[in-house]
Length: 295
Ligand code: GDP
Image 1 (cartoon, rainbow, N blue to C red):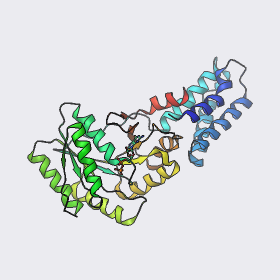
Image 2 (cartoon, rainbow, N blue to C red; image 1 turned 90 degrees about the vertical axis):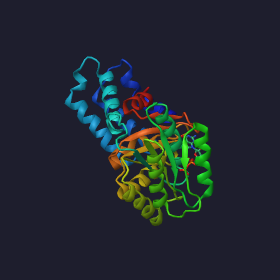
Image 3 (cartoon, rainbow, N blue to C red; image 1 turned 180 degrees about the vertical axis):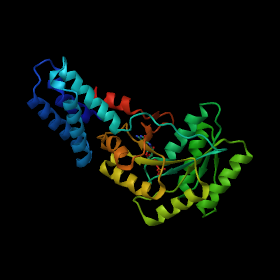
Image 4 (cartoon, rainbow, N blue to C red; image 1 turned 60 degrees about the vertical axis):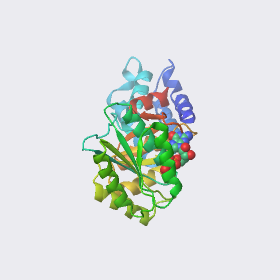
């Protein structure tokens, strides 16, 4: 994951990690290289610049150059700032509500259906949760079938209503079905489009208003780089969602989305998808991710 970024940051911090003498000049040079590495990883220019400025300020504030191990302290400052940039502490999901209603949003192909299954499986394994998956894509019958396949695979019930063209009605009926059948979590998979468009935004917004979910999650493909951040912004403007799911982190993604999304929409990344299998889901821990990136 993020091999390229890790390598570049490792190279940038090489001098500091060694035991040579550390001067103001090589600290400045290092920060320039850190910024370059972030830009190469698809981090937005402003975010990368603010990041290195913050590291510099902290280093000055802590009089890094006069400390016993200036290099190590600098590396720690970079790691702490990277953790902070990605969200600080891990964010849980709100499981209140009877049942808890979780609404999935995102573009087509982002991994919504796959993640809905992964989350259902993750919650089901907690034993106290009995999830229901609800198929609200009224445009693509194949999407409904896909959710049924996923449900069978993880042995979780799926509610769908194939002839119905009203996603709000399906979502409501799904929640009613959950109440009647003892499901305490309802995960609502919705239709996406290939790009942000008004009809999709109106539809998801109508579903959101009608069902008042405890959690609205935005699913985004991390391989889409800076576009991931722009799409997140568009969905957040309409839904004011609660958290981000970053999928396909197992692929050759450069990492920019993971690093910048929190500072653009000010919402935490809650889970990551790391493969096509139902088990390929992880809670997102910013500090672990920073450790992984910085080695
Ligand atoms: P949806 O249109 O948003 O519902 O997206 P899907 O759930 O159908 O996913 C689109 C494609 O991405 C499918 O081929 C999935 O198997 C794949 N996919 C989803 N999540 C991941 C992931 O975390 N890693 C990888 N490698 N593939 C994923």
